[in-house]
Image 1: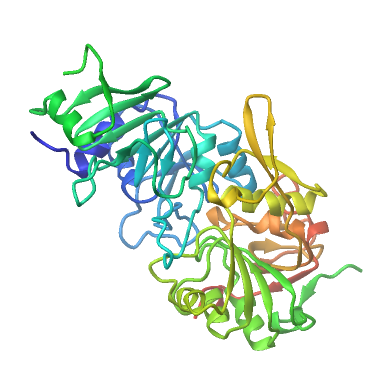
Image 2: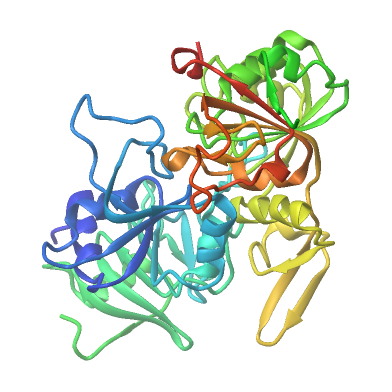
Length: 216
Length: 227
């Protein structure tokens, strides 16, 4: 089978973001989605530090320390963009105004519970940022992650063993192996990478998967 | 005549007492009032409670205040960063108390303090360990967590321009927590790049009206950044 690399995964998520959508991309891997949004679609990126209409990275030497994204990386502002304070920014999130957020994950449960902020280690320093607000606030919560841990364990689980970010909040999961919808009756496989059979995906995943008739 | 301009950061912070609760604006370095933090370090107040989104980056600004062991407790959403080594060492050594707050809840608790709200229900963190021990309530089809305001004695913020009445405008994403922190503290001190005559700010574009600001210190652009 041909696993997707990080760039291909970001491009796959980007393909599903429609014209006119307001979208928040989480820090880390989800930020890559911005580079792959289909040309010709007008999509407005939100960053929780108070900006709508986030544009691409500035050219070297053009960075402005007052214009950054949630990952504290320098960005630019598109024509039509706007700045606002933090309470308004999170009002947009909690108030269900964002169409999509894209988040990374350590684990997602079959019920759509998300764990992405804490490994649970007693010596780990916890940091949550805006993840819990995005998990409950965006109209659609998209997760992108590797299907398996480095040890080969499924990151799709019956119940999250890591501390939760949000309960029953994930709508769709993009992994390097498959695209999977979280539905009230379980996990539905929409797509698999080339050369991967459903039975093999099921064997790797451990938790029950449903196969959509249209899934390749 | 109302004149909120102060001659120096030192003068603007002279009355901060030990044990004060101080909000510090900024998201990472954007909007961080570096000159005011340097003055706070020089001023000497101890046993402080600090409210900021982060817990200091590298060796300057808030990180330097932490390193000087002047902070008893910090409320923030995202302490752990690649360059948060001073916080990390204090936390692991049990030398600082951390109240970890989801970022939107942090912002809303600050806003609530400034707006006279007694408490509020938010869906954020329901069912997670950050809601453990908190009152919850089901309203309609959703579950919510009760959260209380965060008040402060001082807010130290950075804005772009001010007039002598304390009206403020900000610059780009350096705005972040500034406007809400200004409203939540008994005494808000703003570090600004430029001061203007009354009437010099477009009243349609004022972000923080002067009622929320007690003191303004102009800091030359070259000194705005952390040393």
